[in-house]
Image 1 (cartoon, one colour):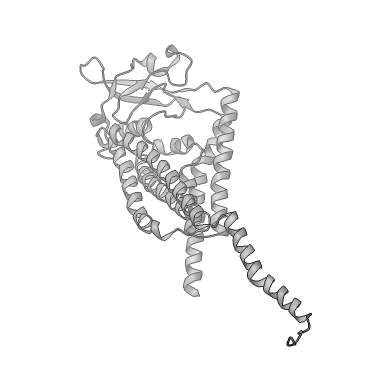
Image 2: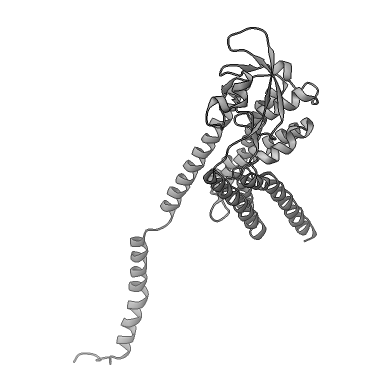
Length: 334
């Protein structure tokens, strides 16, 4: 009894901690509804290749990156900016551009990003300083952001409530999925970490673990919904979920090696494709499980047939006995 209470207390403590962390990541982006963040007007992939120099601005001439001389095809010099010692402006700038697996990044308005650039046309590396400007955001975009944040917060809280009221493998699997794959955005949360390289690197490791746990949890949920139990034929799949989670976490962790000077775009793309594969596998599992349940559940016609047989075997003999009781034995025929 004491062991069970201790386990319940540990589980609820873990649930509260993870829920608080999830809300800490997505809730601050409500601030962007009122006060948008800044943008350098460019985006780079995980190899450091710059593929956009306009960003959220209406035209390229409004982009700080374009005006600073950046062009599509230029590359960040990852080796020159790498976080060999996770301190210094170069490392912080690189994490601000490539943190969270690259792509669109938002920064504090007015922040100057000193980028070591390898020109697309070739030649020696040069330092380009891009000063972020406040990005233009319309009312409709703010409204959509507000809806995303409300939906993300509600999704996480609903999943946490499910674990709190019905703790089990199924509810925990769904919570781990909701913890990571929710519509909430995390730009403000990462903004608070961008200029603190050690915290940013620690967050990247935690992100990888959360991603692996979320993918494995999603598959666990599909294997146990709706009754929090899975059929025996899926036993080996359930046993393989921890290994699958470790593989997915390792793939995302490897994609962050660009912070140490390595190109990781192919690994990042493989990570995204694996996420789609997990979604497809989850749908396939649900369809197979549903088909198997339909085969084991008697059809309506079969149930009616069984009821009719029971009626014939039980009710009819009783009626016949009652009729015999009302008849007098005619006696021997003379």
